[in-house]
Structures are given as C-alpha cells and as structure tokens.
Image 1: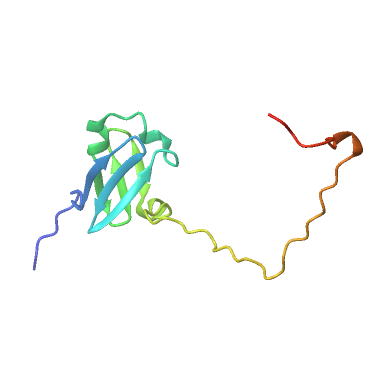
Image 2: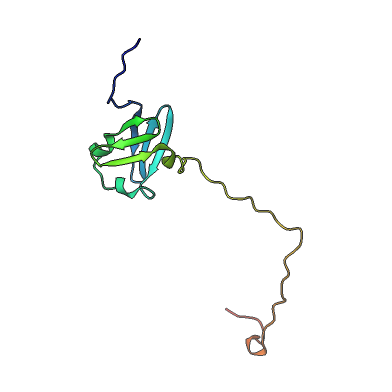
Amino acid sequence: MKPITHGKAISGVEVTNISKHGLWLLVRDNELFIPFKEFPWFQDASVRKLMNVEQRTPSCLHWPDLGIDLAVESVRCFPLLSRTSRPTTRSSRQAKTKPITMSKSNLRLGPLRT
C-alpha cells in the first residue's frame, strides 16, 4: 500500500510568458492565455506575484500572493485561436443604382480649363 500525502499542491502549472496583453500558462501540456482585458485583476500585479501560481486540483489555479482562485475552464473560454468571420458571398444580382442627375445650377457651361 502506498502512503497518501495530504496538503501538497499538484505541480503542473508554469507561467511561460507575460506581455502587456496577458499571461500564458502551461497547464498539463496545454497552453492557456489569460487576457488582462478579461481578467483585469492580474494586470497591475508584479511579475513575482504572477509567477507564483499553484494548481491545487486539475480544475483550479491559485495565486496565493494575489488571493485569486481561477477555474481552468473559465480560462479556456478565451482560446488562442483566431476567430474567422463568416465568408462574404456576392449576390448574382447587380445592385440597383440610381442615375446621377444634376440640377441646372450645378451644370458647367463649357469645358473646365486650367
């Protein structure tokens, strides 16, 4: 029978990059991005406090110096994948245009000379 240790944090998280836009975490072979725009309480924290992160359970990240607990799933709502917009299709019908008409006061008499 193997002894069970209680109270130890599961080491499986590492901060891999911090930029002005957010921070990247490596969590069990998955890279996650935490954008400061969506999680503003990280934006003004020191690098030292951001780097001190623990993964107590597979689903929860904890920053003890900041007093922040964050579910891994809440971070996954903000993937690193770009969102492609719906492709535009051109209609086979031509757009209806109105003929350009000018009032008599806008008509010039003779060619424009430079």
